Image 1 (cartoon, one colour):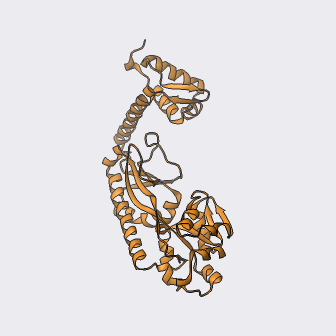
Image 2 (image 1 turned 60 degrees about the vertical axis):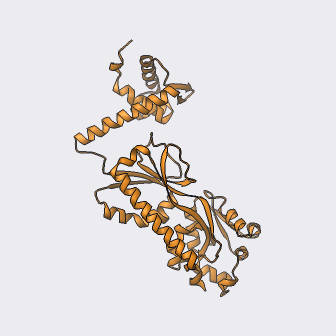
Image 3 (image 1 turned 45 degrees about the vertical axis):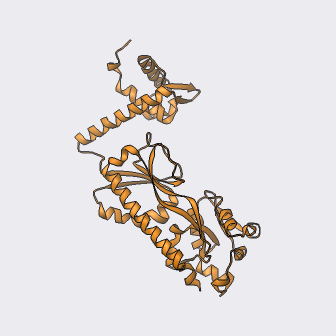
Length: 322
């Protein structure tokens, strides 16, 4: 048996790739070798280690418990090698912040504010991706993510930004076209049956939840509905005058203040779920991650204070139509 000290670095890269893809064929494509060659390299390494790294099952493979531990350590070692090489050649990634954000959160809340972070920290290079999927930090390039949920993210650090708070919104013009000059004091959730309700297939329960909370569940059976593949599209449709969308207040606050949209109902329906800053524990020591965390928590706190004041003192959307 060959000595473990003679383990081939390329074999480790191939094993890491196969673990990440859970597939020998895709690992081979990434490493520019055949799936058969991947299998041979893996088998050779398993013989040296005297334990199985993978359980085979057709084209797909899964890590054994020993393989999970081993690949995690291999990945860390490979990352250190890459980091050391880049630092030695002046290509350190310490200034590059890679984040993954939910698309609607990015477009409706983060992007309008992100320039302030860039002005404060011009040395940090942002790489922003949007996705509805969550990623395993151990196998992705991301330093942090913004996730929606209840805050239960095992093995990760999470900080609440703000909780979801739903309210129906529509364009000011459409509101007057349908209800005329009806006083706001007389507008009720039942009036929604005169409008088209704009739904999102990524937030399928939002209308049912809000109408149930407002005591007007019957409206769903008495009005037209249009469905979109994302919350963001339903919000844009509301801005365009197609109907009422039920939206998170934090997302629509700027449109309401600018009187592009109205939020005529005083029903306050906070959710138990919300948006969270999420990162692996090991990332928190990095300057770029700590600075972004401090910045986004401060921005979120400011947003929440503004919303709390508006809810307590009367919504701008209501005053704008009165």
